[in-house]
Length: 411
Image 1 (cartoon, rainbow, N blue to C red):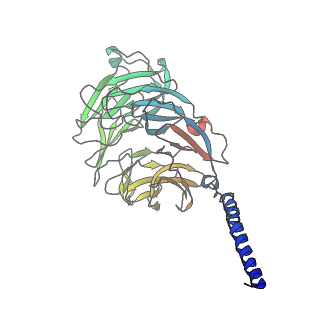
Image 2: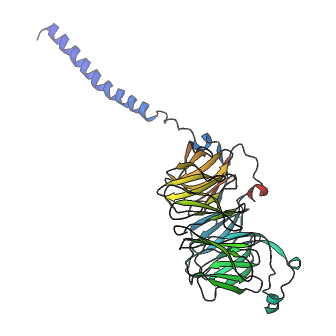
Image 3: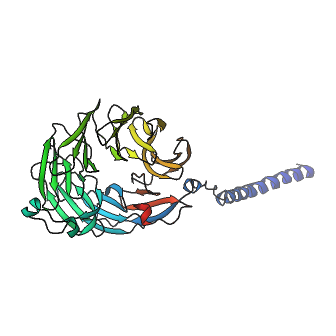
């Protein structure tokens, strides 16, 4: 090989040697640049975009393996029932736990609690003389009560302190749902197809009325009347007194199996035929023609200031104008109403998202994922959303612009 040829060959060798050394270094540098690349920007917070904030968060103290099974908002308190049949009361304004007590030691159904303000009932159970000659109401101590019943008993509790004022066993029947009270009596439906009325002062049964029909819905007591909806589709009104005379009844076209509502002198009922009925409570007169909703009623009928809300299985949430019975809107994926704040109604959907919808049009403006939570309080009156996990994490959500939550707002 000539001198020139050796020079050319040497140049090529130097080129390939240099490339062999530098290429791995280039690759390493590129790798370092990839590993230190800034993460993708996080999207906007849906809750913040909807003008909401977490007002407070709390953690309930639970026993090992104890889980929350239900949450109910009643006046100033949140009530939680656990799988160990304990009832826990929490101040809905501050999230402070007030008290906890066992509802029953049996393996039995615990129904939703009800509240009664200004109940007048002494701690000591009354005597037979108190039945024939009851003491003056002015002489009795007053307290705000929460009442909760199981299949076999009912407890009357001072809801401020958690003290049990009455614990009454049902002698010869099992309850089919939660009962109702007028402050003096406890009304409850029995598996024997009777309506039973218990006098709270002496803790004895005043009367029982055989209606021959099963009752699956809670009873409602108001304006000295007792309202009962039955599996035969009959809506009954009794005098809420010590005799229990039926005042009037109306036969609907299908069974009543979901909680109805009484407000403003009217009763509103969602029957299994997918219709909402409205009747006056004085004589049972029809207020407006029944309105059809989507799906089969499968949740409580809720009464807002101007709107009725009803969930229908397979049909979502329907909103009805309370004044004329006309359908306002329907959200097909809606499952429950969590709050009404300003012009917005906050609808929990089947995928555990909150859909922020206009109260009049139903048009959705925001969607907020809430999959972290297992339970939500149905709420129509308080300007807050309450969510909970089964393990006892509780969250209160409010509008960012809202003033401080007060006791009056909760009540």
